[in-house]
Image 1 (cartoon, rainbow, N blue to C red):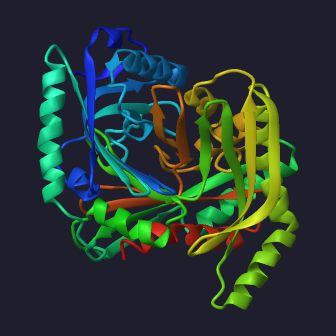
Image 2 (image 1 turned 90 degrees about the horizontal axis):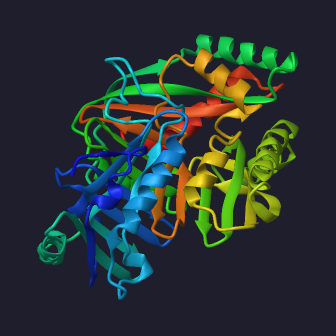
Length: 445
């Protein structure tokens, strides 16, 4: 099926049929290791999903890209025939995400070739596992959609029964790496940002760095995802290979938004420190983070901004207590935020309202985005942008694409950033960024 742009109205003319069956197991590697594109992997909590092949694709660009995607995805699901007996876990979902900035990615050396400003796909094959429950879902389009969906179901049910998970291989190794900017360049960028803050033009801006790595061997992203799932089981692990180009993947601790019915869940994650070599040192670092005026100020800016962004949609917004979120290599300040909506809202409406949060952009938003564009010497692409899924009811979950990289077979570009406020120290922020590379770098070295 030809890709559909979000501003087109022809989606509803297509016959779309879904079929599904329960599985004894769900070996996701069999889905991810096929050559078919696009591919998507998602794991959060007790749920993991692997998807491949496109029954329908939606892309969009321009200022209305969120609205255009939502309209096209809603029309696609309206036209999709799903058996009533199929439980919610197995019902088709659309997977994808958005670029951080609006606009296409240009330049021969950009690792983001093949990544539109917004792209979602309804997969031909979707395998979902939640706790001990596993399901295979197939989707086909066209006049013979029902027959084709049944044939795909039979083919992949046999294929998955015959397959089994294997242990992930070893990391490929790195032969060369290049940082952008250099540490001296970083000091200049941070100094310029703090001067803007002193002049009252900004309250906060998140500046990012990139690390380009040449690999010693061909990279298996499914292997990386398996290793990340072992090391970061409490993070959102994601992988997206669009129709062409590289693969975007990561293990992010930050949920942008989750919508189920009229309940919205999100969080403010900001402020960072390392992990200790001993439990006592770990506790000391966590206590120091909680007592840090700079980090508490940075995190409060994020929490207050998210509350303000949700209030136009919500009857109530509840902000939890500030806690420390511990990951394998870093600790963050975290505040949970829950809202009850006044009316039914599509998850993509909330994604548009919240992206980018001050945790990855800054305040005021327009001034921060302008500073990022003028300062950073590389294209963020989909880094720090929304990635996730949406279903026919308009529910869904999106994570913020940090702790991430985009890779081809022998090249990987990692991204990480730090929030700059009035009293930020450039060298401390540099060290913080290096910590944030570790989740992906450890899987490559």
